[in-house]
Amino acid sequence: MNISYTRKGDYLLPNFILKDKEQYNIGKYGLLRLEYIKKYKLGLFFDLLMNDTLNEYLHEIDTNVMEKVQILTNELAEKENINEYLKQKNQMLWVSKMNNIKNIAEEIILKEYIYV
Image (cartoon, rainbow, N blue to C red; front, side, top):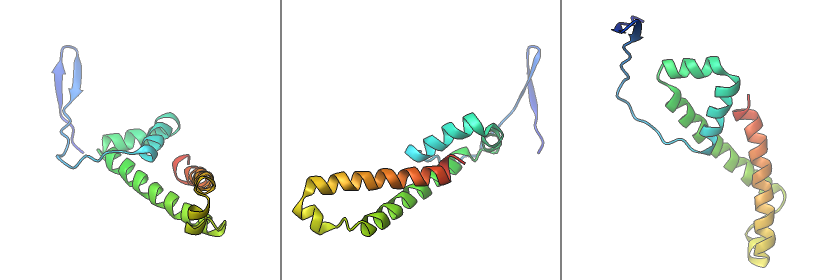
């Protein structure tokens, strides 16, 4: 990689030219991962930043974690017999149980994919 510099007073500043590529919106899980790598994985953070792949990396993490949380939520709900019948019979109980299931699934997935 060949880097050119521009002199500004006593300083040499690198001339970085970023590729024109798609920028993704980053959701909850991507932002959680960003905060984690900025705090605990600084080498990875700077590597992604310097290679201009941070946005893609965070988007991929966000998308994958959302899918995995949804899959695990569905599996846990099925295992606990939380279904449409319960939803019709007692909607408040169904909402409460589904919120608990989602929190459990999210906690498991965050430990495996975000905080590593």
